[in-house]
Length: 80
Image 1: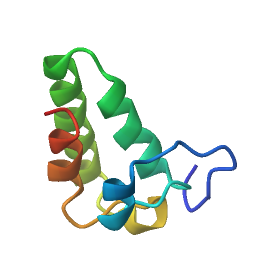
Image 2: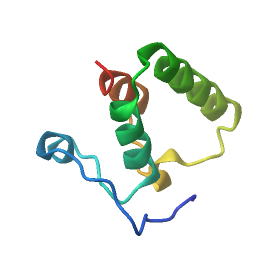
Image 3: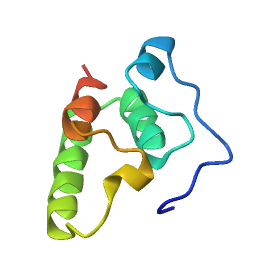
């Protein structure tokens, strides 16, 4: 999934596309998963764990998976 475009893409709202989220990326799949999550606490824990994982493996280029610079905030806002 690293540096790949998704062949089956999630449908994003127009406002999300205007924010620069592309629908053919791993990030877009995570973003939509957050929107669909019924448990905000569980999703928040997932985002925190993902952030810790990213910090642990700094060599990973998140841009290649469609992550915006402020990705953590974007994922957290998706649940509010």
